[in-house]
Length: 450
Image (cartoon, rainbow, N blue to C red; front, side):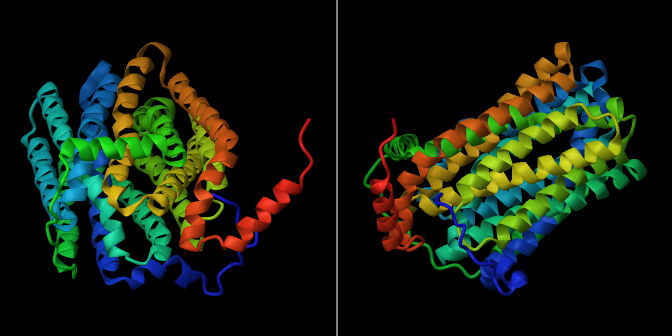
C-alpha cells in the first residue's frame, strides 16, 4: 500500500485501461459475463419489485428476508468452497455453477408466469433465492481464483480486476433500465426469462476458452487441515485480516441499502418501476466511473489511501441518500455510493490478489466472499428488522455513519499495513529494493518523538 506520487500517466489511455483484454481467455470471459450480468441485474430489480408489490405491510421485512436467503449461504459454505477451489478444476466448476444459475433463473420465470397468490409466490422466491445463494457460494471464489488462470501475467491482474468490476457495474447501468421498462410493459417474469437466456453467453465463453490440461495433484492433508491453514494465514497476516474486516463492516452496515431501493423509489420519492430503474442506474454509473479510474492505474501502489477515501465517500453518500427528498439529488448520492463501494471492493480485491500466496488463493478469496457476500445477508436481516420500528431513513443513515467510522480506523492502521506489505512488493519488483533502503535511512535520521 505504499504511495505512488511519482507515477506518470500512461501515454495511451485506452490501451492502458484495456490491457488485460489482450489475454484471449479473459476477453471471452469479459464479453460473456457482460451479457450474463445484464440479465442478472434485471433479475435483481424484478425480484425486489415483485416482493415489494406482493408483500403488503410486511414488504420491508420480506425484502430483508429475500436478501438474507440469497446471500447467507456464502457465509456458511464459502470456507468449504475455498478448499474445493484450491483442490478442483476451477474452469469446470465455473461451467457447472453458471449452468445451475441458468436453471435457477428459468425456475424464477416459471414461478412468475404461474401467477400464484402473493404469499405462495414469495415463499417460492425465497426458496429460489436460497438456491442462488448456494450456487454463488461456490461460483464466487472459483471465479476470483480463476482470474489468475485467465491472466497469468501478474502485472495485468489489477487491470483485469478493475475491468471485471466495470463489466459488473456497466451491466448494472444497463440492466435496471431495461428491467424498469420490461416490468412496466410486460411484468417481472420476462426479466427472469431474459436472465436465463443471457446465461448462455457466459457458458459459451467458458467452453470456448483454451485452458491447460488440468492434472489432479495428490493431497497429503485433509480438507479440514487445508481450511485451518487458510484461516490461520488470513487471520494472522495483518493486511489480509484488516482488509477483510473492513469489507465485512461495509457489507453488513452499508450494502443492504439496495434492499430499500423500492421503498425509497415509491414511498419517499413517489415514483414507480421506472424511478427504481433510474436510481439503480445512477448507482451503476458511479461504479463504472470508479472502475475506469482503477483500470487506468498502472500500479497497486497507493491503493491503501484509495480504500480510505472510497469507503468515506460510500458512507457519506449513504447519509446523503437517506435524507434526500428529490429524485435528482438521490441519483447524485447513489452515483457517489456506487463509486465509493465499487472502488473500495475492487481496490481491496486487487491488494489481496497481489499479496496472497498462490497455494492459498482459493481459500483467501472464499474469505473475501464471506466478508463481501456472506456478511451482507446478516446485514439485510438486521436492517430489515431495524427498519420496522425506526424507519428506512434512520437505518440507512446508521449504515453510512458506520462506514465513515470504518474508513477512519483503516486510515489509522494504514502505516503499519504498508510496513507489512512492503517486503512482498519488493520481492515482486513492484518497489525497487533501493527505494526501501533509502526510506529506512530517512526514517532512521529523523529525531525521536517526544
